[in-house]
Image (cartoon, rainbow, N blue to C red; front, side, top):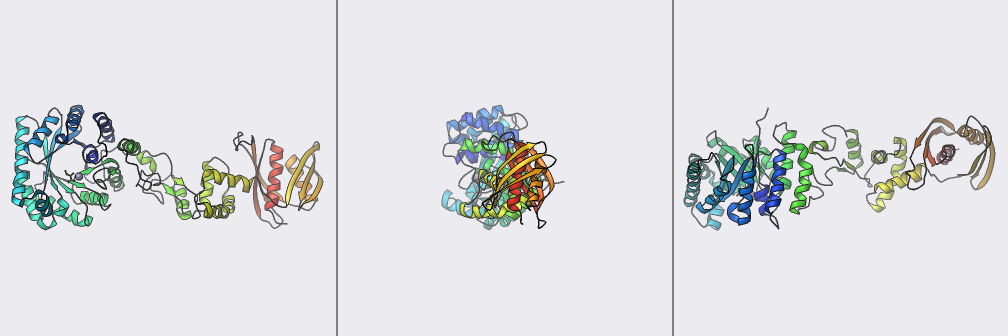
Length: 507
Ligand code: KIV
Ligand code: ZN
């Protein structure tokens, strides 16, 4: 079994700092509860030195958190930020101070305007200072140190490792390696993570914090875990600066699929994502993996066929998980376009609770496809219209005028055939038999092999109909014909179904 990863949530800090309107205390409280309910191991509450509002929010949440959830706050590598941060969490049951500075050559030179040794000293002093303060507070809080822009440190990695070893000695127990801006290959980053892991004492937890500038943050995070990182910093819905941070949902589900055990309650993912989207005002885009409105839609006929055949299975033919896993019950969407096929028609009509056979869906498919070529995706309404007109109301050479009882077992049948009126008396065991016998007398011979009645409870688009008749017949050329009809009278529904069958038959 794989070791358990430690999920560290940064929605309330990295996610919050990127919002057009950062969250109020009340909003943070609500989101905090959602994060706890997901079973996430640690929560970064905010950046207390950034504003009085964030300080109060961090303090309130730190006091609220129970001993199971590690709560952390961010501080730049200076005394003022560290004091403020520790003040915010001083009453927390399980607290962490998270401090950071860059060690990337580019950033040290162009943004901090400092030499590498100078920056390393600032980092070291900050960790020493925090460690000392925590001791004075008589708390067993731990310290996380982040090498901001670690992903840009390939050229001075030896220096970074040397500095991190000093920082570990100074009291940091978690070393976080951010890909602050995603610029290169995931595996280049992962190799760097591996090297740091191998070069630091065993008790140090290696963490990764990947931004998603090139859309590879999930891959980088997953592979970093397999390379030895144990703490995974993620944001709900992938919120965060620019293109966001690593998306929590994707990482949690990918690890689940890799049989890695976590403390996460995956069934809360979908609902939580909807809440986060609403509260952040950041829409879930259509194609967002797992949670996007289109993430479970199938439009190509091949995909629809596979998806429908494996609907109840965990690994669907064309989906990564069963949607129930993440508490998503809106079902896989089968959308009918010109690319779709018979299984889609079959599945849509069945889902709308009407009877249909595969043979009928085969017959309806080319008609629906040519309609979709002109219109694009058909709505369920449009598919239902097509179903009714092509199975229950088939136009052709035969047109029923009337079918009336004369005496028991005897019926008068009037109809048009190729615009010529025909009249015949039919006798038999009930109306259906009488109708078929009457037609036979005129040379229109069809053999009934199956017959069934469905009750439609008057829901067929205002028709007030209550019965649907389904018949299977074979025509003179031995074709199997399936036809239906609806009427308030079951006898008439049967006779109408026969006339629909006649219009599909060859004579
Ligand atoms: O992206 C980053 O480097 C950060 C650090 C503060 C951890 O958010
Ligand atoms: Zn970040």
